[in-house]
Length: 501
Image 1 (tube, helix red, strand yellow):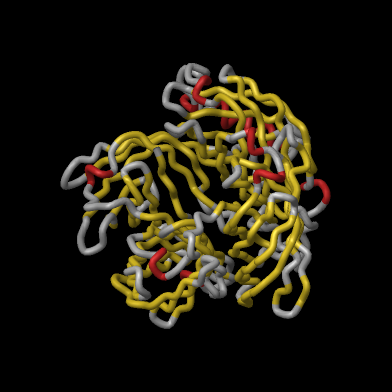
Image 2 (spheres, helix red, strand yellow):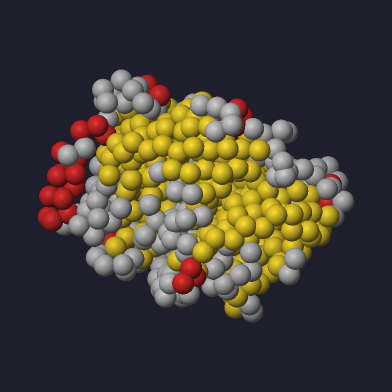
């Protein structure tokens, strides 16, 4: 999504020419991508060396199932005017091979080339693959089928939770998690949120704002959120694209400066109980996965490093909880089993946790599903999903999965999408696959990867080990038979890896 210089184009052409296996029998599965889609993208741009600036995009397109994209529209944001596109129309082409991996070309200013992996539900995970020679844009995102009947301000009504995160122009991280009530006429009230602004944590008790679907043909809209953070008024302006009445992809459209972050994320409709949320709304296993960016000193390094965490949170429905987690900060792993704690949930869905000496906040979407934010210096932020009823074993993780890197925190993260097959064998399972990786130095397409895994129901249901060329030596947490997450314990540039059918 960024113009390449002449050297970059030559390097990229060489990479494509030398990776003929990137697509076997291109186009044979083009029908898998058909209909209207919305997408979101998190990444960074670099002009050389280890320096980078944040970049994000949201948008939509229509796919004809035969390799063509029409009715495309996207908004992008980054540092400087060249990075900013507003309601930019586009067309494009794509090709999906026999293994359900695809390549997509967007006809936008500067061009954009994506590699993507299809999932059984028709959605896809993707990475940008047009950086080369140390210049360009890298990152990952998701494409999801949309309900075009929801393209109306009136359809956005009721209670919503949201979570957005990103970097400012100096690469300091910020995240916001919260909730509001939309009236279906362009106003939201009863706003509440928690903000971690580069390690400075604030709780916003009540605020209001506005929203509007500005284009009923594309599902594009705008939202204004004017909270007061740490006594300082903030005026946050977002552009969004509807997935359906219960989900939108939202990106901040304000100019990115050393003090103003580029926030990107999602807004999800809350499934609020009749009497409101309560401690009983948290009453089972929840797989959490969080990403942060440590400023320095993490893992023994002197520069910024990713800080990632995955775990199983087990609340009892009355205020007591335990947490098992695995964390990797710049190559320094930590594993904790059965950390005890307490929690309290208010009627609007805000949940406060005390876990050992740590304080954690979540905003609930539904029972055992929530956005999480941690008041630490790396600004850990992410999501939790309800774990399916176990017991989990290797045979639970079996079949074909689309996988990808999520929310890369630094330029050094290996950003991939691909298709993978798990055999469910006991006592040791095997995962094989083919992945496409985007990097500032240039893409690696069609790489064969493999790993072994072992998942147990005890002492932590769904937790297991994984080793090989998929995440190195790491930990796997099963969410259900159709979804699991992986965190590497050996990678000095870790990320949360998500695999989904």
